Image (cartoon, rainbow, N blue to C red; front, side, top):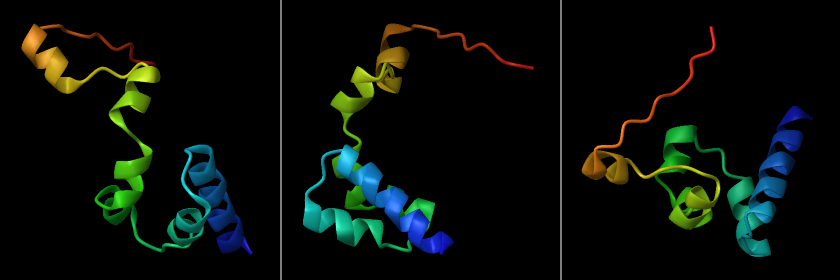
Length: 76
């Protein structure tokens, strides 16, 4: 039962990211591990640079080339 819930969560997440219905079913049923999914078209097409910028992420190349140093708060 838990495996079905896991697939359903993946399916809902892919739909929310705007993937077509046929691809959503196929990609949500994959049993690949995290590294394999990260190297596959699943993440390449769903998590785009525009989406990351919209969420406030800064490009590493932008940090390196401009010399900007970002300080992150550490919660202890």
